[in-house]
Image (cartoon, rainbow, N blue to C red):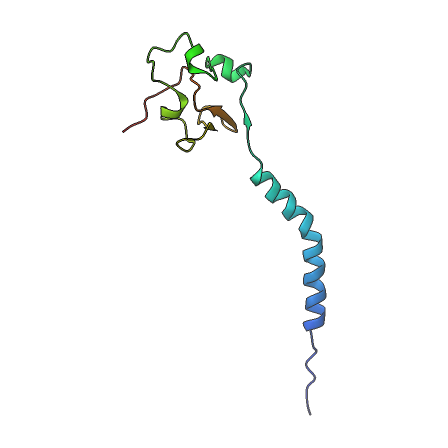
Length: 109
């Protein structure tokens, strides 16, 4: 006697298509959250004010080293030459590369 093997390829295709259609909005939402750019931190932000952050380092009265800016700080993780970048102190926010705060630490050579 010959056994009949059901052809599941059509059912499988329909299931995968339905799952793909349902998952598409969620995947889009997840990818949009990853790709969004962070906001530039404001000097009036509570953490920025506590750290005495200034977007223009020349305006920081507490700055002792005239060459100290966010761009040459060990906590700044932005790319060299960018106008702004992320900082370990202000997680989720960008700082000006020309800025300064009292957490500034010289970047190792």
